[in-house]
Length: 572
Image (cartoon, rainbow, N blue to C red; front, side, top):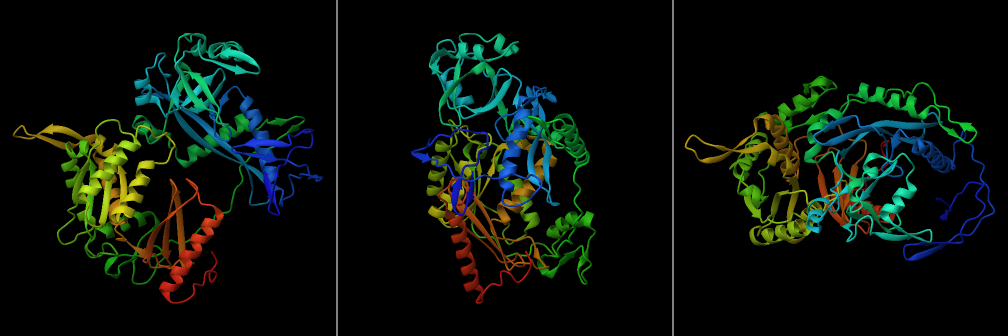
């Protein structure tokens, strides 16, 4: 699909002789009308046809890689992974692989952008037998890799069928099939062991294909996908983050192994023996201004504290803790709420509040210290979005009676997919602001739960202490929460730019669950404000909406400053 002169066009290879005149889409039928127009694609020439050339090249590359028995791909456009796992740890397979996509290079050529990546799949499939309660509590809304013979692809589980693989039936190509019969007919021999030993009374899980059709898959052929943020892979994922030189070597190995001999009919794809090298472009770090007019510089500014580039980060942290410098914005905090799940509040909550308060006070000393109003909400029962959202609303309505700022701890809900945006966190931020005039930030309970353990004091009383093996991680976590979730949410800026930006105003945008967040930053970073707007799209803004919101922001900025903004005065 391309657009020319405001008209959407479907581009097809010349050898395609017949196209349908009507194409049914969701609630509409699109009519295709042929145009008497022929495009001569020249891959060596850059111009308006680059979009078409890159799309065709992407399809051409996908086909031979998809046919390579050494690789598997979760879905079209996703990375390719080695079929043999690189590591097995704790019942989880780590698969290594690579992404590849055609791009226009800076020297006006065509290249392949290749990078190494990894994913985590359970070593064991779903059980042969599943009850509805077990499926709802453990597997519903989970992503799995469905091993349909040699074709492995990712599915999103939506339900559990009433019938097993022998009884589950459907019509395909005018013939009625059982699920087991269809799989055995379509998978080439020899069969993989998990399919060869598949019991004929295995449970069937349900998913939807790209067209929205409901399909079934045998539960023992579905292997759960684990996100990198999940507890199960957090420990081993650190080992998968490779140093740059190892990542580069691994990427080149994938190029040599899989991309050197790609053929498309009679044509071969020729790839250079060396990767493209781009000339190094550097820039000098801007000076940072802290409290009491203290400036940190890596560019030799007179009167500033000087720092080498390698030491810049550590000196920045030291200045934040230095009472002679400290935060640029140091006005006392407004009313603070800390909203915790009841299960946390009743166990390690008191120690967590104590530790977090100590870190906040260390960075941001103020009269009376950091003493939030601690509020708990009922997190008992199944931790779904609906139940947790209702409990949070009730707690806020009962105990957050005045405007202020809040830090809210939530669980990762059971009905949230591994790659889905956090619907609960987005709801908390939106509704606390709209209904209670409370600006909120959200943290998750994962790290705190792993960081504290039950212990006994000298008198035998029950107390909670940080887990020794987790102390370093906990310290970094608390520091991050104190700065990014509490102080920044309260608009207490740790530093601003002593070297101005090129633009008068910088606007950042993000969209989650039909809510657009806009952050407006002035030239020095000291004038920052945020806005929430509605989005008609769940995770994006339409072009017209974006233009309207940015126009509103610039008009407000001009009115606030009392003069017109010179948006093009400096190069971007």
